[in-house]
Each structure stands twice: as C-alpha cells, then as structure tokens.
Length: 306
Image: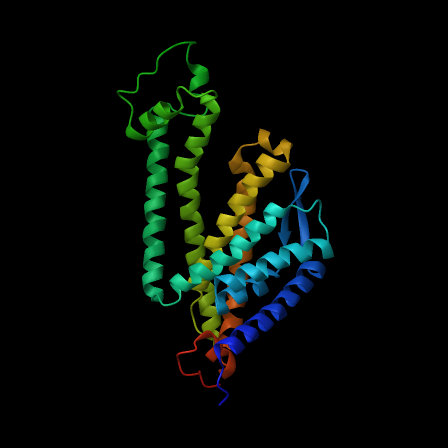
C-alpha cells in the first residue's frame, strides 16, 4: 500500500479540485441557461454546482472556497452574462467555504438526530409565523397602518399583543415608518412561514431521494448533504440579492425585498435538491476508491470496493 504524506495528500486534493473545477466550468459554460428576472440575468439553471460542491464535501472549506470562487471568476470570462461583479465572486467563495464548514459540522451527526432537529425547527417556525400573522391581524397592524393614522396622532400600544407592540415601538419614530413596518412584518411572518415550508420540502426531498438511492443500491440518506448545501446556498442567495438590489440595480429598490428574494430562494431550493442527490451518489462512489478514501479519512481504514 502506498503511504501518502501530508504534502502529497495536499497535492492530490488540489489536483482533484482542479479536475472538479474543469468539469464545473464546462457545465457552466455550455450546459447552463440564464433566466431574466426584473430586467436582469437574475438566475442561472444548471448542474455545475455538483462539481463545485464536491471539493467542499470531500476535502473541506478551503477547497470548496477555491472551487466555487474560481468557477464564478473563470466562468464569467468564458461566458459573460453582463458586467463582472467582484462582490459576487466573494459571495461564491463564501458559499463554497460554508458548504465545507456545514458538512464538517454535520458529517458525524446521526441522520435521525438531524431529521428530528429539522422537524422541530420547521414546527417552531410555522407556529411562530402563524401566531404573528394572527396577532398582527387582530391588532390591525399591517403595511398601511401608519397611513390610516391622523397626522401627529399618538399610537396606543398598551392593549396590543407583544409582537405588534414591538414592531410599532421600533418603527414609530423612523424616517419611513410605513416602509420599515412592512419590512418587519414580512420578516416576522413570511420569513418564519417560508422557512418552515422550505424545511418541509427538504424533508420530503430527503425521503423521496433517499428511497431512490436505496433502490439503486446506494446509501439511503442525503439529509446532511442537502442541509449543508441548502444552508450555504440560502445565505449566499440572500447576500447576492441584497448586493444586487442596493449596489447595482436601482430599479430593484422600488420592489419589496421578498419579491426579489423569493424566486431566487425557490431556484436555490430546487437546484440544491438536485445537486445534493447527485453529490450523494458521487460521494459514495468516490469513497469506494481506497486512495481517495485515505485522503478524505487519513486515520481510518479504506472502504473495500463492492
């Protein structure tokens, strides 16, 4: 058996990361499409994310950051889609780093524990969001609340429920109380409910895809890979939406943030579900190779080929 030194392991990891990067660039350049959104190239549909995610899952955050950042940078110049935006390359690097980091945190967790944690979070978010919707509606607090007040009139919050009182207190003295209130209402109602819906969809996707993997003879769960990819993807999608809205596309500022974010989040959910399924299959196949298994788990015995 060949003994791999620390230096040779790093070289092999960089070499494989370069291979995955090449595959990602080919897929991004020739096998992806851009969907215009609000007059701009807002969303990209493709499977290049599979090969930018693999270095993060196999080798860790640094390699994920390298693969994702270079794919964004080189991919733009190979197939430009508008002006180059360096900040989006930085968020791509962050996304690759977070995929590897979340996977490191989740890899050794029991799948049953992860599922239970997701179910608890989904239920809590749904209850919190629905209760806020009911409380705000009962108190008559909505986006037009301040428009209905007489000029200079004081707001009596004593008889309001806690969430209503908090939002009114926080927005009453700002320069744009109506706009600020609408933002906070979306954050405390649509945000938790949307989170619970995404979590429920993720659990359904894990159940369906894990069953398909079991039928195909693969390990039967993708929940941890899906969670690592989806958490990183949602963080990056949110940051990218803020960057594009506040710094580049002035026309987006007239639209509510949720209107801009929601289609991008749905695309991220669908794309990462597909990517997680493919990554899980490739991860299982690659780890059957003894040399690669020793690179990923240097202190464990290699897995025998089936």
